[in-house]
Amino acid sequence: EVQLVESGGGLVQAGGSLRLSCVASGFTFDDYAIGWFRRAPGKEREGVSCINSSDNSTLYADCVKGRFTISRDNAKNTVYLQMNSLKPEDTAVYFCASTIVILSLAPGDYDYWGQGTQVTVSS
Image (tube, helix red, strand yellow):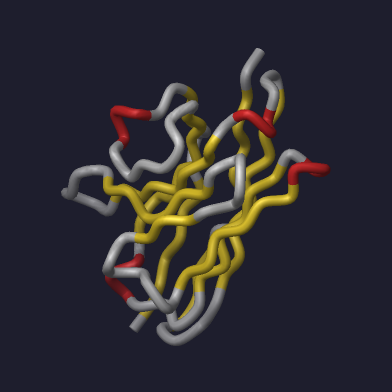
């Protein structure tokens, strides 16, 4: 059974940092790109960042470039999202997902999804 489990969310003040983790199981982790997405209240789900499996190439949404860093540890089947300089507009439920596509921030390209972790940034 494919599973993606996010953790690391919480409440933080603006300017603070959080590190999200996504632990995967049930598939060959090394073969898949992993993406992070978020859904803020009243908004559509949007792609935040992704990392591929072949050469660890990354992709970021413009709104998080320079503040968020994605990385992966294939030995632990885990992808991380380091979030620095957080802003109130980063408040959302954050999801990780897997895809065989090399790099994409389009939710429709992703096959399996985690349940999400809440990130709340206070002003």
